[in-house]
Amino acid sequence: MGISFNHTIVASHDKRESAEFLTDLFGLPEPVPFGRFLVVALDHGASLDYADVPADEEIRPQHYAFLVSDEEFDAIYGRIASRGVAHWADPGATRPGEINHHDGGSGVYFRDPTGHFMEILTRPYGSGG
Image: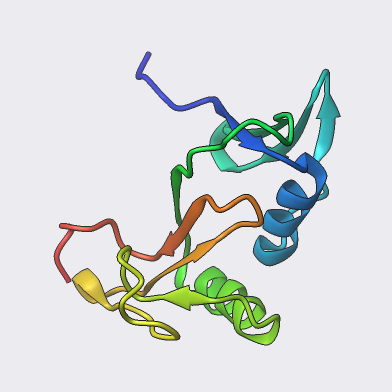
């Protein structure tokens, strides 16, 4: 059996707001409660399990990158743009409002309501193009 990714916990000060932000942008089903988590299901059995952290606790932003098809990218990017979500072509946020085209694909970075760095890309970096 190969090793595959199953789930990770995503810290948030408002798990519903953050989980629904992602499902709305990505066109995914509503998050599902599981214990103290709100679970966002992804392909291949993977999930993001959103958990609330007390408001007085600092959350260090993490990076979550999602490989999507060209069609999915266009749909997600359309929602990002139409909702006025700030986005960049680079992780340093020096190219606002742009899309990168590394390896012949498309990629964009944006932040979720908690401040986590989200990324959608159509080709894995270093895959050529």
